[in-house]
Image 1 (cartoon, rainbow, N blue to C red):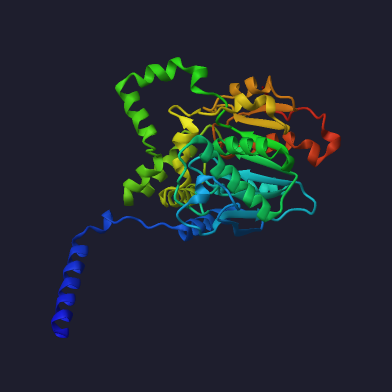
Image 2: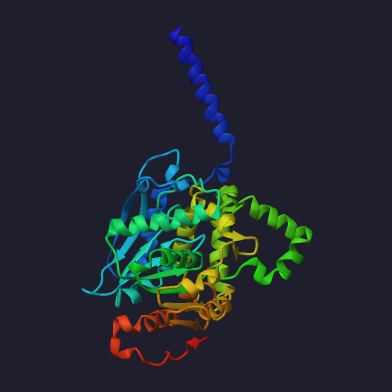
Length: 388
């Protein structure tokens, strides 16, 4: 009987092996994981000259007694926030950097060296993104989704024992940074919002999206949006062709269609590898999209409605060619009761910090001038930058 079982198992193994050998290797999915992401991150950050440390900061499974859905996940495993901290001069002001949607902290690779000369730079992957934990996304409302990011960031801040720091957020990360500052202003001494999303709602510009949704293309795209069909699902669905799709995007967006300094061959190769692994990994934080924004990237709970409650001085930075309009920030400024300035960076698009890193650094340093050199508080805006 044992011999028969062994023979059957052997035959099955051979059949399986034959089947696998017939399956074209080109069609096999390319594996990814947190380890792949961290390895790709390390390769990308090899471009950086400033020494840094990488750590997975344990934020627990949630604050005691929390009723927020991500804390009621079926898993009670601890969550981790992937964090990189760059060496700096003693007593340098702390600058915490938060990436945008579809990105991770490695997108700031062109900025770390320059900013680390002035700040203690700490960059994170938000919960559900990059090399951080990717728990099942269980949020069912805008309120729960905002809490997913705001509360996990607050647990990270506690774990790192940080306070009185400068918080910088890009795009969707700017939205989360602003929402965090509204809830926990006591920890933030200055807010920098780069190409920030979330200031306008659909009702502010209802005619154009309404007309577009009336077309068959608009109806289809709106359905996909409300079904939470994310760009990352496309990358995963194309399997082994995913990396080439990402390569075409990075070489086009930051090469042929760049508004500023194009990527070098090494930068493009390393960024492509990094972006692919961060996009192809398990879906988690990306599923926030339809709860935070309606179709057309209009905020469901616009920051403009909270402008009068702003308690933290703010610097807005937009690329001159940013598709995210700075006019929302201008409107919000009218209602703010704290210092606020809006700076536009020439030769910069939505990723101004990649397109024109020199101009971006100048804008950040100018926005933080009172923390870096108090006697420069009245200095004029650096040449080339545009005040809005």
